[in-house]
Image 1 (spheres, rainbow, N blue to C red):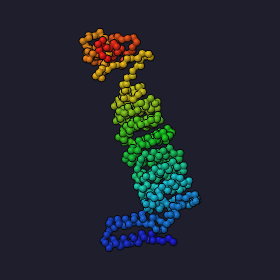
Image 2: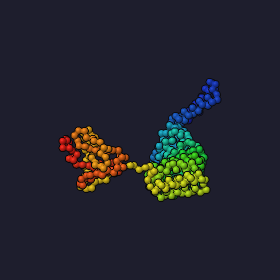
Image 3: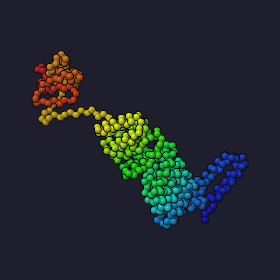
Image 4: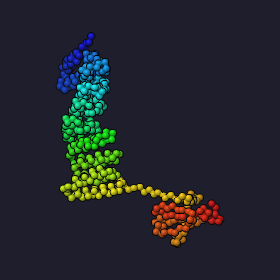
Length: 444
């Protein structure tokens, strides 16, 4: 037997609360708050989680949803899933406990009507318990790729309402909605276009997610055909009309070149830059960030995109803009000709190896640990060189400063069998055999 105590508890508790409020003289907002707290408490603990009739029926509903093999009738499965979703709207505790089961049915059920009903239920629960449903919002976006037209259409409607009413955060997953612009079904494509048109009116919402949309759609993992990418971005970028947002977006796209690894990503970013309406300020931003894409200009499509920007912006432009365009064009041509990034190349000096069979004698070190240079005979005055031997070692002439010796073309005398490898721009001293460096009365 099923008792109805849980169902009658709410009514009796309400009458008792009203009577106590009248006795205590509580009226107005205070009484309303107390009554709201009572109703919330009853919904959370006594209707579907207590001992009432709905709590008993919820067990039967959950068992039916968990065992679709035994209860395989499509109508029964659809009714059970819808009943469970409605019960979850009553209590946040019951909702959190069974949300994983609902999401599993929404993704794995073979019944389009059942999946469609659960998408709507997820939207309702986002209004009712937003903190509970928010971690599962990605599963709602995944239904945008459902094979059923009915499910995709319902999902676009649900997500549009949630985003426009700020019930879910607009993140990079909104790129899944952007993909609906190229959906094979015209009605879904039209709904997606209408959604982005309305989103562009809500302050900076579209601008804030634009870099993430471009990044995710150009990702090699998605493998989106290039014509579809261009069609989506052509529609979405044209909805941004504020001049400051466009200037900032130009700079952000230039910075994205540094993280792009594939040539396809280079082409996509360059194409997005061609869609911008340019002013003198935005052209300055582009000019100041040439170094970000200088090493990508060898790709013909990237180079053609920037030349088209210069050509299209230069039509009927003012002289100030033309001056910036000329400077930008010269810089792009210079970087493309060099084929390297604008930063100067590292000054690495590579020594030329000695010919086979000819090895250079190692430099020697004195007792103090300082490297000793080999003597050189020069036509210049011997007074310009210092005697560096102080402990019986033969006279070793030290080279003067590099700048002085470079102007004096010293002529060196060394054995034909020895070879000296010179470093560019560094004064050199010929190597001598160790026995030639010692005096008769010196110690090695």
